[in-house]
Amino acid sequence: MKILVAVKRVVDHNVRIRVRPDGSGVETNGVRMSMNPFCKHAVEAAVQLAEAGSADEVVIVSIGPKAANDVILTALAMGAHRGILVESDQSLETLVIAKLLARIVDEEQPDLVLLGKQAVDDDSNHVGQMLAALTDRPQATFASEIKLDGNALEVTREVDSGRETIALPLPAIVTADLRLNTPRNAALPMVMKARSKPLAVRPVAEFGVDLTPRLKVEQVASPPERAAGKRVNSVAELATAIAADINEMEAI
Amino acid sequence: MSVLVLAELDNGALSASTARIVAAASQLGPVDLLVPGPAAAADQAATIAGIAKVIHAKEVVLADGLANLLAGLAEPYTVIAAAASTTGKDVMPRLAAKLDIQPVTDIVAIEAPNRFVRPVYAGNALETVTDGQAKHVLTFRASAFRPAASGNAAPIQPLDAQIASAARFIAAHRTQSDIPDLSTAQIVVGGGVSVGSAEGFKLVEQLGHVLGAAIGATRAAVDAGYAPNDWQVGQTGKIIAPDLYIAVGISGALQHLAGIQGAKKIIAINTDPEAPIVKIADLALIGDLFEILPQLTAELEKSGLKR
Ligand SMILES: Cc1cc2nc3c(=O)[nH]c(=O)nc-3n(C[C@H](O)[C@H](O)[C@H](O)COP(=O)(O)OP(=O)(O)OC[C@H]3O[C@@H](n4cnc5c(N)ncnc54)[C@H](O)[C@@H]3O)c2cc1C
Image (cartoon, rainbow over the protein chains, first blue to last red):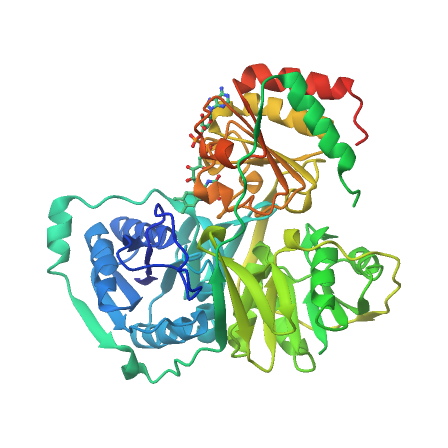
């Protein structure tokens, strides 16, 4: 079985972001970047399937600037076999990303595509579902457990009202949630070895996908700041304040 | 503009967020509501104000089936919308790609018929976008909108479509409870990992009970097994916007704050005066939750709140 994993390079999730004063976006210059955390869970799941003998090749694909090589190398160091960078300096909408990934799926014909459920920059949560539509494959989003049984996957998904389990025939698309596994930190020898694994860099133009954005970003703003509040010194004071709040609340 | 809204169902019942999504979508035009579920849910949906007609289909639960069902109905509509729930997130991008549309999702404000505000970077920035496409696929964050009124008696049109899904539903693992729905609750009491155990969480639940509140939890508390995962509030859990959020033993990591930015008022109970949540709380009591919670619950019980 061949697994394709899509990974995105984003502002590191521990960085407190700053909106640019002119409202044109979020400052990314000089900011630490790393692999989107959800993508890391997807890579880990693929590598575990390979280690269990269920998959014989794990291919990593990232779409982004040359620097996105970093996150592919991280995935290779975690145990993936080879990488593909679709190089583009432009910021691309999720529909375009899904179309580019669909081309890669056409070429590679993976049995399973794993992605993170969302990217922590645009927080879109679109790409897996869109790729599933474009390749006409079944999908399981927000996966917290994956079991492979012959030619079918059993996936437990985290949903608003709890969890649910569904079965998908392969080939299929799965997006990873945080509880799927604990991603490994690659040891130094693996990091060194990753450099010698194959990594193909391909210009985005090669794919002939129309990159024109459909949405116009008018502005990016900081949310209203919360003013620092008050301290209360006793439970009695707190209870009085809560009771007052509740009495003021509009009934809905 | 005519609008088709996918109703939000929970275990076959109409969810409280449907009326909120209808209210949001009504700002864009008259709403037809698709209810893929039991007839009782369709009957209930027909009472929501702002609905022109209810389209009632046989229950469809999986994303490929729902996306196909919506795609089949899409032609006459300018807007197709749903909640930014796990169902909406599962289905709408799939539908959008089928229709070759870039969706706009998790909308928290409508500025014009094709201009929307949505949070990015875990709510640490708000992006305003104009959607220039001829047709729009949208999801709305339920907690950002007030519910539509009821009292309508919209006609119900049965739909007799055969919808197949490549995936197969095996089982639902639901948390059964009678506490209010977290994503639309007016008051939420949230507990962190410092609550220490599932037993300890009972203290949080007791306070919640007196207040008629929904219960939330941090990811750390859920990971530790003290609370079910559908209680998780935050970037990767539920996004809530209650009038009052009481954070008990919660540090206020940015991924947790992402889920409570819409809260009107935040109260923090924490041993650490330097905890990030204490810094942004409207009101804070510094102290040990194990001492404070039982006393607070008792005081509030005594005060005879009108909940
Ligand atoms: C990609 C990603 C997504 C995430 N998504 C989410 C999410 O959706 N939701 C979420 O919550 N987290 C999320 N997290 C995790 C988040 O970063 C924090 O780890 C988590 O919110 C911390 O939970 P906590 O406040 O319970 O624990 P801690 O950070 O350990 O805080 C415990 C707090 O309890 C206080 N305390 C200790 N003892 C007592 C006592 N006896 N009485 C009163 N106070 C006490 C301490 O002072 C401290 O402030 C995510 C992380 C990542 C990387």
